Figure 1 (tube, rainbow, N blue to C red):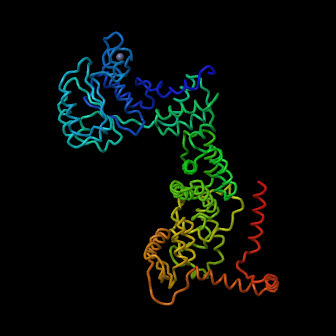
Figure 2 (figure 1 turned 180 degrees about the horizontal axis):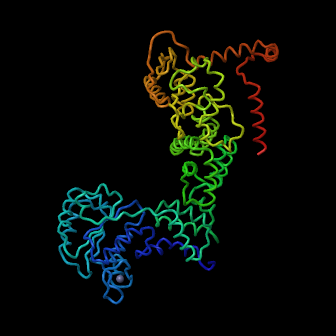
Figure 3 (figure 1 turned 60 degrees about the vertical axis):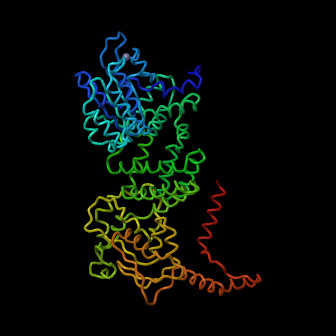
Length: 584
Ligand SMILES: [Zn+2]
């Protein structure tokens, strides 16, 4: 292939555009039906081809037009599924210059006048071909009156006229029209079929390609043969000798499977540093932040399917083994990761700096990883009294058996032990928010209703959910009067947004999974969390300043005062982080 210039590849999409039904891959059902109709001479007067963009509707319409009018190389052939491509009608139709085959795009000719031309023309016999054929693309765009005019012709179609309609939105085509058409649904071509097609083409063209690279192209084409060929063209032009998976990944803005797998495995294992390092690797290779997150979503989806016992069949081997190892995390954890990623994907899409947003998302994912799943929390509860406010009943004679009882229930067994998680961090107090994500199929006697114990918990819930504005507002403006299972009575500090109680109620009802009321009331209220924090910090500073050693230090510096207190442990870990960083 060294004697071929790269530009020779760029014709692939055109060269392999199907010119007969044998070349139309992945549409076997359509081809069979048409073959039957032609063999038995039962050709409809009108056909409607429907399917998503790029699936081959227009190609099919043109092949059909040729097949209907082909006369064969000897000029005696009848309608066929395999137009010869050599006869005069075949060549004229392929060149778009046959007087009896007319193509119209309904997207730009929607009016009744445009249709009237067709109808009038349809009354005359074809000039030279067997059939006069009208191909109307995007037929659903026609106006109502245009459809009505067309309907009259379809009701009593002239003998030698055929209509071929194509549409992406079959539901917008009136039933009166559809009922007079033979309908064909063009399927999205599966990834496997596309990959096999690309393999055949690369072999025929003498191009070497890694199977994984072709698979990646097939996946990116989303069922469109045309798109897959254009991508193959591009990949062939970019690669000097062999089409490699990593170059294709780069071309598509994807991270390699390896990087995506590393990000997800590290994040779900709670190793935020490794997850971010893998992200940076992918980023340095030119992968697009949004595409990385979307790949993470895909991988989470595949792993969840695997965990649910229905692994995807057409994954390349490397992805399949990655998926299998992630599946061990269990459906509940994967479900939670999916929710976080799905929400984060939107943020990354709209963020001014996608890369930063993606990094924040990965941090959030890793942060949530060690939190126990709802099923694990339930398994740890002494006994699971549904909905009641727990602690009161805990001092009964049942106490001695509680510890053993908590280890036996089934739910904890269905969650596979996390192979990834390094010695789990202490469970965060705010593990409630994800309660509604419980995907654990194990039967529970009755669901345990998550409860709100404090305003601080509400703030944590908001933050875990990424609702930082709401969290900040609650912190700054809400003064608690009373809190029960289903009702929070508050007063608001000056400057609070008016709709704050409503927003809180909506958010909390959603997370607690039951109606939760937030109302404004009168009476003595607690200070806002922000005031409480400031007070506590102030007190701590005063206490610290009294410490003899601190007092002596302050005495050494004129005007010095204690402004911040950092626990020694934090300071040490900060310092060791710095050291870690500088190692890299
Ligand atoms: Zn022909």
